[in-house]
Image 1 (cartoon, rainbow, N blue to C red):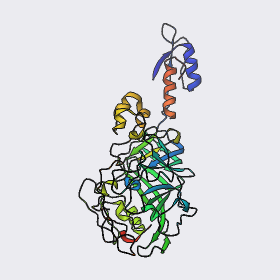
Image 2 (cartoon, rainbow, N blue to C red):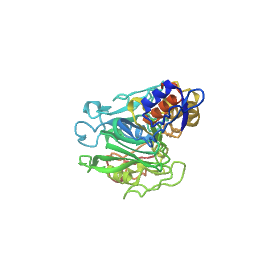
Image 3 (tube, rainbow, N blue to C red):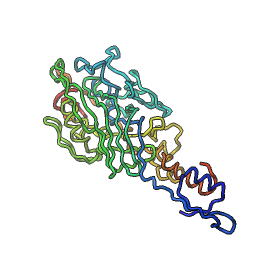
Length: 411
């Protein structure tokens, strides 16, 4: 690239850039400017070192919905109690000391009525943003998210690749504590073709429907929590909806068959469903023809390179304007107006299934001695180029239960 520089700008450019230049005495234009050949190095793809990445996810809407027994399903940080052992399949009380909303770099947050997000607690674990208790028959879910900070790894937005690992555990509790499982140390891998995978080490407990005194620890198992496609890395991270709709799965032995009709048929990844066959929750993670099918699809996953400048759900940002409050994905308009950083600040797809149609209230009956009926199916490169450009211009500055027995009427 050839530019004509005045003396002061020339000295500044040469000193700062260290660029090779050919200065020939007496050569130049008639006005005294000296012609300088400047070679700007090709910086190539820049790999970002991530030291405090953030992962945010609701898992799915059903993980914050009302349950037919035990109150509600909810998320919590860490494992139950000190060791993960609740002692038996039972509905938890606050006095049991099993629940926590924060654990190290892991926390559970929830929206308030004005759209801001606050840390959850025991009292709010079954309430929606308006303070209304979620039930199996109303039109409400808690919209809680698990948030993990402190992620470490690398990302190359130009190449479209990233790998980030978090240290910490979150637990998904169903039926008020009767069955639960946890995921530890999740790792996110993004490939250049736009596909991504979130894996973790899963654990929990297994029990028996007819004898809840039976209680055994499940072996730690590596599972795929989410598979994604069409991922586009920005200078902050990305958000994407994991695969679910249209995903076929082989169901565990004894579990309800997968129903492959309707708008919400699909499944979480196969190895994840296989693991849930041990917790008794299998049919909650794929379409089974139940009233809960619309709440089963995976929620939008948010991955940020820096927790201090993390991506947040568009529809839940207070004061976001008409587009945001309607859940509109307006990345294209924001890119034109403010560049990638502005676009990345509003990346939640409108399809995040956190608002669900009403479900008719249903009555559960059970014979004495049976808890639940079993028969019903359920950014360095930009700075360098900017500095070079300005200097060259002369400016100089710039568990569960077995075989699906938790499937209740309508599940």
